[in-house]
Image 1 (cartoon, rainbow, N blue to C red):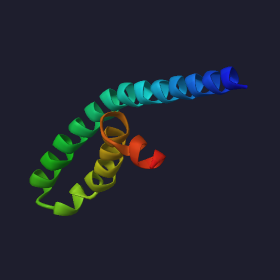
Image 2: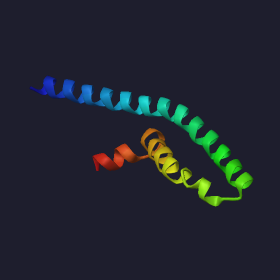
Image 3: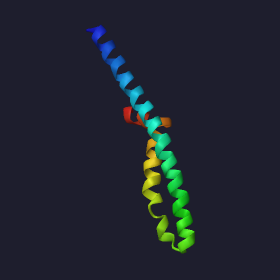
Image 4: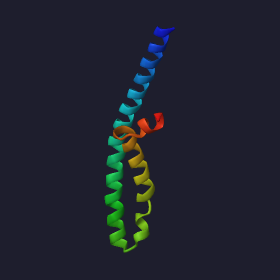
Length: 81
């Protein structure tokens, strides 16, 4: 029974490590998309003189910072707590 619990804990730790690794890899691509989108939307807002063009940056930033917190922050520790 003790060995089975140790193996379950090991599997859970491996799954968590895989999830963090996947999140960090995804963050590279999403971060690039977020950065390019921010630059393009800012240029579009300046060119059109319409600040409403910047609105898509808000939900994109929430997604970006959530992924960052999951990969490099303390989100998993807070969930466990």
